Image 1 (cartoon, rainbow, N blue to C red):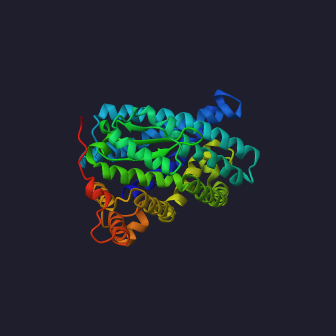
Image 2 (image 1 turned 135 degrees about the vertical axis):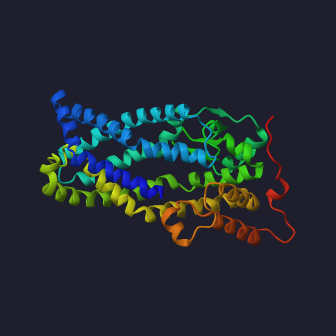
Amino acid sequence: WLLLWNFLLAVGVSILLLSSRISARVRDLSERLTRYKTPQVACYSVLCLLLVFVLSFPLNVYEHFFREHQYGLATQSFLAWFREQLIGLGITLIGGTIVLIVLYAVFRRAPKTWWIWGTGVAVVFSFVLVFIAPVFIEPLFNTYKPLTKPEISEPILAMARANEIPVKQVFEVDASRQTTRVSANVSGILGTTRIALNDNLLKQCTISEIRAVMAHEMGHYVLNHGPKLLTYLGLFILMGFALTRVLFDAAVRRWGDKWGVRGIADPAGLPLLALLFSTLLFLATPILNTVVRVTEREADAFGINTSREPNAMANVALKLGAYRKLNPTPLEEFIFYDHPSGRARIRMAMDWKAANLSAGESPRSGSQNQKQTEE
């Protein structure tokens, strides 16, 4: 239901900013402050993003603070959580303003074909988010330090070397000060590649389970899922922008005077753009989730073939069931899940075990099931 509530919130905020002419008033204020287009867009962007942050805060605090604590998944105090929200807001203000400055420059110079050039801009900034932000933005929220337990890091690095992943050490992230969830990733590009796992994974999983998780994450890197998903995203954005252009022009012709929106190059029309594109994104959620779910299944297959840890893979799927429904209906999985269900992952692990391990042979997880302890 949170997916629906977030969509309805986006719709409500957009309609409020348009129908009350708040967006037009912010645009007018920006024009009074400067006669240059780029500073006008920057001023509008900062004020509008601040408004959206304030209007979205009640649902944000419920979803990401109270609800997480209700299910025992959060470990932060409210002040610590709010501090990180402010850091995130600062990043959003800087990054969002830069994106909007570039987009509105495109709108002014190509009012008829902006949807083509705008796609290029969106893909470039998506590339930054996918490949660069995990390396340079995430350290603003957590401390990354080299993992000092060779019994864990060496098997991981051995798998990395076998798959030509250019890393020399494994990093540990202090995520336990925020959450009880386990996570890991292989991120970066062009010399910034980094393997990282959070300390919850170290505390809650055995060495075999850690190997299974890290092999899965390496699968995303080796199988080039980042570039592939970026390509699919670019195609979706292109189609979405093309349809948004038609709907935007029609809406401005009908309600533009009422809302105070002059056209595509007018920053006051940003809530309308957000309304239209977020609606298309919401409607396309099952398709987008399916695309991601396919890559996750591929990474699962790579991971189990690399780690040869079917029992560990199944055990991790069971542990993730603490905050992911293990056995959704096929319709639930199609609409809401961007990862295979726990049931599907356990079935894959057991099918692999039956097909690849001869009778009487034990998987690695059978002989390496010792629990990792703090030293």
